[in-house]
Every structure is written in C-alpha cells, then in structure tokens.
Amino acid sequence: MIPRRIPTSLITARKELKDFFRDPRSIILTLVLPVVLFPLLFWVLAERSPEAFGGQRIFTIGLSGEVPAFLSRTDPGYFLDDLDYPAAVEDQAGRRKLLFSRYDALVVSESGTVHYNNADPESLAAISYLHEASSNIDGREEQPQGEPAFSPAPLYHPEDAAGKLFLSLVLPFMVFIFASTCPLPVAADMSAGEKERLSLEPLLSTAAPRSGIITGKLLAAALAGCISVGAYFLGIFLSVLISPGILGEEAMKFSMNPAQYLVIVTLMLLATAFFAALELTAGFMTRSVREAQLLGMPLLFISMGAVYIAQSIDLQHVPLLIPHIPLINLGLVIREAALDRINSYHTAAAILWSLFYLICAAFVSVHRFKHESVLGGR
Image (cartoon, rainbow, N blue to C red; front, side, top):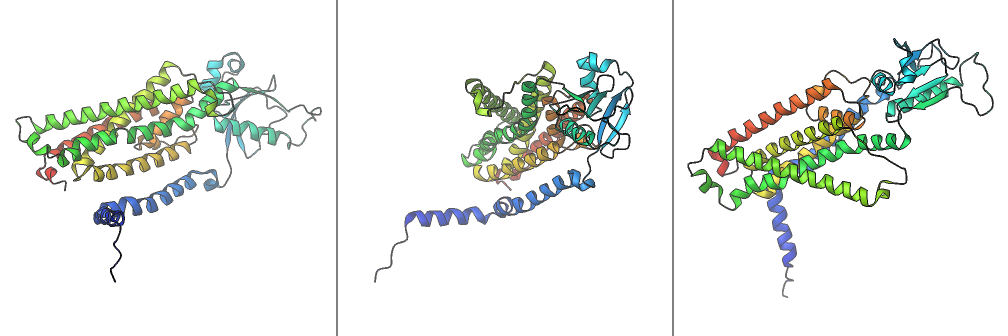
C-alpha cells in the first residue's frame, strides 16, 4: 500500500513553525509576555481605582460666599475650600479655567450657581454627586417641583467639551500606537535587513566611522517614522473632515490653541525618535527582519500599558512621581494638553526625561553597533 503523500503546504507550515519556535525569544515574546504583562497591567489599574482607597471619591469644591443650603460642611464626599477671590469666578472664564486645576467644582452661593468643567470626568462626577447629595441634606428648604437645588454652569460649550473628552481618551493611544509601530519596518530593514542582504559587512569595511553610520541610521529611522506618523494623522483628519458622522451621532468640535499643538507634536516627535532608536538597537541584536519586528512588538504592549495607567490618574491629584516615569509621563501630558489643562511642570519633566531616554537609547545603539558581534546578530 502506497503511503499518502503529505501536502506540501503542511510540510512548509511545520518547517516554518519549528524555525519560529526554535528561538527562545519567540516563545517568550509570543507566549510568556502577554501572560505576564496583562495581569500586571490590570493589577496596577485596580490599585489606582477609587475602590482601592476605600471606595470613596473625595471631591474638592471651591466656595464663594456663605455655605448655601444645598451644601454641607460635614458631607464625607467632598471638601469645601473658601475661594480667595470669589468675585472673579463668575466674571472671568480664564479665572475659572485656572481654578479648575485645583477644584472639581466652583460654588457661588450668591447666585446659587455651580461652575464645573464639563470636559473633565472628575468634574462631571462631582456635579453628579452634588445633585445627589443636595437632596439628602436635612433642613434644606424644599425646592419647587422639578426645580434643581442649584444652577449648573458648564465651562465649555457641549460640542467643545465632547471634542476635548474624545481627544483626551483617544489621542494618547493613537500617538503611542503610531510612534511605536511606524518606525519599526524602517528600523528593522536598516539593521537586520542589511544582514539578510549581506550589505552590512561591506558597509562596515569602508572608511566611514561606525558612530557616523549609526547616527545616520538613527536620524533616517526617526525621520521616516515621524513622516509616517504624520501621514496617519493626516489620513484620520481627512476621514473625519469627509465623514464627520464616523465618530458617532454626538456633535463634537475639535479646537486647540497653538500651545496644545506645540506640546502634542513635540512629545509625538520625541516618542517616535525614542522608539526608532530602541527598534534599531533591537534589529542589530537579531539575524533577520522577522526577529527584529518580533522584538519591537513588546514596545507596543508596554506603551499601551503606560497609556492605560496615565488615563486612570486624577488630574487634580497627580502623584509627584508620575511626571518622572517613562512613557506614563508622556501619556499624562498628552492627555492634559488635549483637555487644555497644560501643566508646565509636568510638560517640562516629560520633555526633559524624553530627551534623556532618547540620548540613552542612541548611546546603547551606537555601542551595540561598534561591537563585532553585530554581524552575527548575537
């Protein structure tokens, strides 16, 4: 009996899988890393949740004048703080925006108005809590049927607030996804691709210094990555311009001032250059483009974890250590810029640390490139 011939497709698939899993790094990055990374990520998020601190959210309320009937000094859900310059609250929008960096809501007892930042989830939660708490205060004069205890006054027009909230949620993820993935093909081709084409050794045999070669590769990878990131954002902008309804039925208005654009673009360029340097270094540690791209993928997972942590931080009470943690500080500052709540200290710390880590990554890449084992990829 003639044995049945195994299809060529199955033989090829088996050969490729054996070759893929022969490298221990492939097993670690494809199987071990997700199993370890995501439980760690969700544990960190759980630790940052309000439930981890007793389940009680404490809001900070700025008070102008006497305590109105709908508030209580003894309510455990919020802390009342008398404003230094109460008259400026209702007259100047810029003053209110500045105060919202310290308070979740501003109460003017004379007019019964509660100002809140409708582009801030914490401020929205505070106004919701005040609505609920105002109906439970003993001794409060009964309001007519259907009339609220106070008059809510949002900081932004509903369309502007919806746009700012949307950008604060989506923009950090988009920046990190594009910054970590766009330079990867170029960096892998400039490093591991040179080995596969057998063009790296002739390049190193020239009179050109290796530091100059690697510096040129870093600049090219970073520039190509930035151009690709810009192209992605341009494509998204054109898509929204052509089909505004693609973002849903809720009306949104996207408006940013020059300072917001400057902060976001600066951090995006720094993040792209940083990822390009890391991915180029990873390419010199491998023997093929496939391995180089495989080593570059964990950067995407790590950056997504950093954004998740940055999104869970209350912008009113940012821990002192956060602006100094790599990637998390970038996600935090991009989120602040999208909400038009730029903090000069957070922004300066994020930019300076990004420059420092970029220099370190470039130094490691130059050091690795000067090592003779760069030709073998080990």
